[in-house]
Length: 274
Image (cartoon, rainbow, N blue to C red; front, side, top):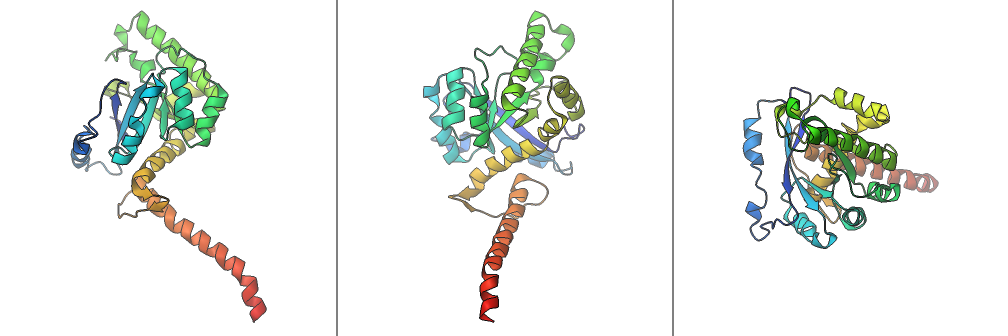
């Protein structure tokens, strides 16, 4: 379904509640997503790339020690955090090294989203996710919008209110959009979501970045965490437009530009010698 809507990079999400203990002692069982099996089944879809993602739900800031262990395991391509309190959000933006901040858009937030907090996260390269599944399916993830009752209307109201807060606090920067769909009918074309975001006050250029540029930057940051060690990047021979291939393309350009700068610095000295 997502492929038919034009999406080519798809992250399969694994949501972990706060009190769930992850099996860090057995790294093979840390990621329950059969990503390699899914990749083999979807080989016939040209240009489709699948990635794994984990989203940690955080309420108590004291229970964030598992983030550093996740970095060491390299089990997931993307690491996201869903803070449900203001203290958890402040800790996430100030101390954690993650790729995506995913606020629960379908529920009423018990705090006010501040520009200072969001700006601090954007400076560190984090992206804020707007998951539109709560607008379509409601909090209970109903398969049909016809059965949505009062809770569904409240979910949509909260979604719009939270979007307005996040757009204002982020100044139209660093936003990315995802479906969070558990059913095929919950997914939407990017043009439909862009029209909705434009109606909520988001700039058209920022909306397009939320589907192209910002997700790619978040994915590259996650892949660099796996493919690099102390600013040294491990090259690979992966084809297509995957994140690893994009990283491989960046390195020769960076080396080449550095080489040109060195040549320019030494050029006057060479001419004087001649």
